[in-house]
Image (cartoon, rainbow, N blue to C red):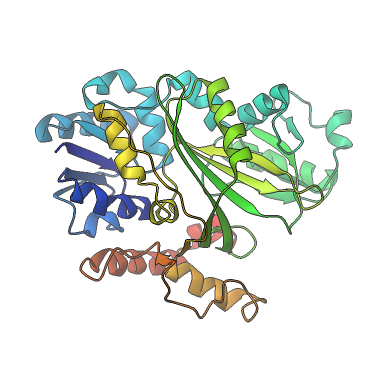
Length: 383
């Protein structure tokens, strides 16, 4: 039994809580002031609240909790927490934080830096130009194969990403975006029609692949490009092999979640970005047989890892988002799997824990409804 601190309470925390509780770990959560999913779970022993606005204060708060609660393992549930843990990794040696050194972390987390590595090594990725190294009026930019995505190098959730159809739109849009989100890159737009595939890997300090899982997003909200509503577990050894090699080139340690998109013209999966923490839809991999919570904790504590059997065809739905997808979709009557099939041996729900642990669903759904009426959130998601 160990004292474990989770930084954040999204649905990814909800996914790993049952297994951690079953292993008799004591679970402490540090989250923001408002309730979410994981902090309402009956599997959580204690909840601390702190609004992340000042990094130094946040680090001091983590350090204080780690001391008070005898924390042995810290797991980040969000990008900001992962970035801060990497940056201040030396402060948390006693908590066995398994995360890349900050320089290596940034090479993978920075989308433009990741694209540069893919270009250098020949890994599949969309054609990309670094706008900090290439003048906006250069031949390469003026003659870029539009349409294209203007993408900030370091943001989450699609914030600051804009589709530009020609050079004139780029000139009109870029200055304000750059002033708001910082450094940008220009990336070829991958037209719709291809698969969206997420790949999860864990590499230890010897760069060995400990575990992996793959899932395909079937529906998402907002409907044009958004968060997972419905995903299915699939097998793809080739993309796992490629992503593992990327992590070795980055000298990565710990967990990584790759977003890839299929080019419908070639059928090739293109690497888009690395998320340095569990994705919200990680429960899909867990119900498919890969216990990610156990993997993270066991490696931190030096416990020998188990071998996991991964099953294809396990479906994970986010009921709240799937309802919004159905409301706004033109394909609602013909989507596969059928939207109206709510139960089955292979169907689970991302935003639900269990019938004996109902509060996370109630709390998380309430907060999601509030978000839909928040103008800033709607703008960021372009709803």
